[in-house]
Amino acid sequence: MTSTENDFLQNTLNLATQYISASPENAENGLVALVLSLVEMIRKLIEKQAMRRILEEDLPEEQVERLGLTLMRLEQKMEELKRHFNLTDKDLEIFIGGIQEIS
Amino acid sequence: MLDSPPPTYHLPTLYKQREVGLADVLDRVLNKGVMIQGDAIISVADIPLIRLNIRLLISSESTYQKSLLS
Amino acid sequence: MSICLYAMCADNGAFDLPVLKELLTAHALLTMQKEGLMLVYLEAGKLPNLTTTATQYDQIITHLSYYTTALPVRFPTLLQDLPALTHWVERNQMAIQEKLTNLAGKVEYTLLLRNTQAENDIAPLPALPTTTVGKYLKQKLAEHQPIIHKENIVNAFLAQYFPIFAQNSTQHKRLAPAQPDIIWEAVFLIEISHLPAFLPILETNFDLPPTIHLAYSGPWVCYHFATL
Image (cartoon, rainbow over all chains, first blue to last red; front, side, top):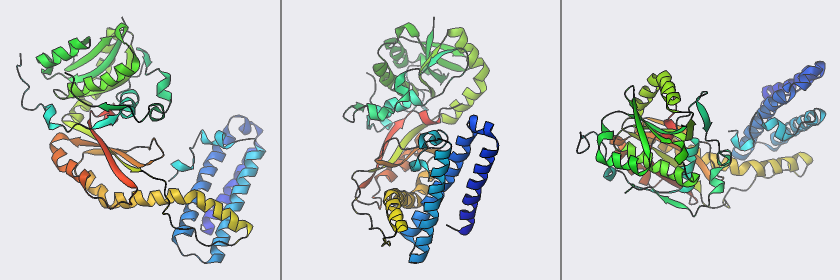
């Protein structure tokens, strides 16, 4: 993924955390789940795209390593947020379906 | 009163009949077609079957011959 | 008396035909003319076993479609009474007529690509380092690879053949596959006069991997295009 996409995702996750933490009522009315499901959808799209690149392009090992590291960190960050707000994948999938449906 | 169909009618012989699974038929009949909205409706397809994946319910051995009623 | 609406048809005189009169009588179906439409319905007390009735529904509406344009209705659609139905038809008359005009002389066919065997011919994963990141990537790649592989097959197939399908049909809709072995599914609205051009295409020797096959079903009444 490009650094732009990476930055976008990191920034979105940070903003999401700040926004939700700043207004407790947002956590109550399901806004958290909605925001996180959107972020999760983008994360999955980026992950999917990265997989394609690794499988189909002859990327140098160092680039593969960097891609992998970014993806790993994004997924970890997402897991942290889900734990923090006590949300499961099922909660997020109400808005957006599983990975099979993301093309 | 018409004795035979006008020329614009397409007759069954023009169709090539294919065997289809029961699931394919029910999926269309129960999930597709015009949906009528409004308070005149008592229930529209208000059966638990609809909410389940019909294809999983019906075994693949139930084939259904699409044929003319005779 | 509550009623079950079966179909809304073009009122073109077809219902005077003995064959249709017999069909309706055999299934206790009643008709009502309204604003250039023929409404086909059943008095709801007479609905027997659901699966039987549902399969019969397709046969009935297919048979009707041989003689007139028949708009299928989600089954079963129950209305309070006949006045409730006619009232609804009045309010939606223009949309119904327009849809009947659009679907006149057309049928639908479903096309799908089915994967008959689990893939064992996917390219091996690229070499990855044995670091934490490497192991993470290995797991992710293993998850994604089968999906990407299928997508590539579908995209190649569509790139090559979809234009021909589109050329010989009026409209199409891609469907979400209902079963895991179906990797692509779409329904095509085709004019009956175009069937002799469309159908032979389906017998083409498509350049597909050995485990992938094109299957199709039809002709169907235009269920997927019957929305107002």
